[in-house]
Image (cartoon, rainbow, N blue to C red; front, side):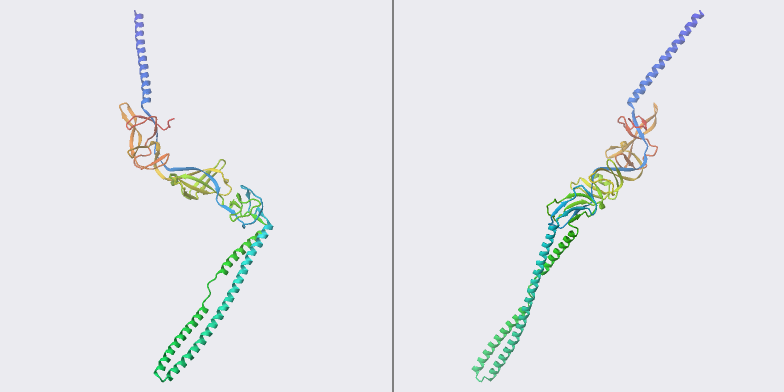
Length: 433
């Protein structure tokens, strides 16, 4: 009986043990199910704390390396080109021979211009001779008119004196009347003759009409002499056209057998003036770039930092700003494509958060913070909405007015689902994958 009792007691303990194990398994299963369900229902969020920083604004643009200054290689016009010794794109040193002119035709050109100058000089001599002769005639006519006037006055004075004497001797009344009439007529005739004599004097005194033909000719003579001087200098250089600076030939404007023009014979860059970067940025981006700012230029094989912006000008389309920057010697090559990067920093803000944490509602800005709160399920993490004032922001961060957040605040930057204020969350400082 004792053995049977022992067996029964042992079976009883085994039953309760098995029941306990089954109960534990069921509780564990429900716990796992609860956690799995909770993982699907509770949002996973990434949090960060506000920090101090300067906001950076970056503007990028592609552009070309262009010549900063182009020279026009000039010579005298109407000269025959005998040979051209360079081609477009060729680098030349200052003083290199670019082309040669025909010396025979150069000599003929000098003779022709000297002939034009000599003709004008002879014309001036003839004009001066004619002027001198005309002046002599004028002076002679003036002298003669003065003599005639003086003689006429004397004659009229004597005639009038005799007439007055005859009048005083007249005895009869009738004779007196006739004498008075004769005297009046004589006075009128004398006055008329003297007036005509005065007019002759005035005409003789009159200056001849202005004639500036000599002065005009002298201007042409000086211009022609200047041309001759330049042609003689070319002749002393044996008809060679030389490079005025070191640079690259960008244009050949004449061919062998052609005559030179006023516009020049070559165009070339000037190494002493350097090259420049030329690109375009959008008008909104232009507020982050100013003349004098340092930019970075990068090509496939080199990078140049702290290049100063030279100019910013509105494009004709009004949609872009043309930006240029002078380059130091020996950097990029003419025609090369490079990328420009311009970076501008704001003032240092004590409270900044990622822009992904911002929410906008009715023109107001909010962020969600994670706070620990006691609930029926114990201490839980809950999202709480806080209104903030945005002072400035870029593509990555927003600067907030201080006082709302502190360095211990846990700001939600991203979540695996939409989160509203008051909802439970599970936070992590690791970004969601």
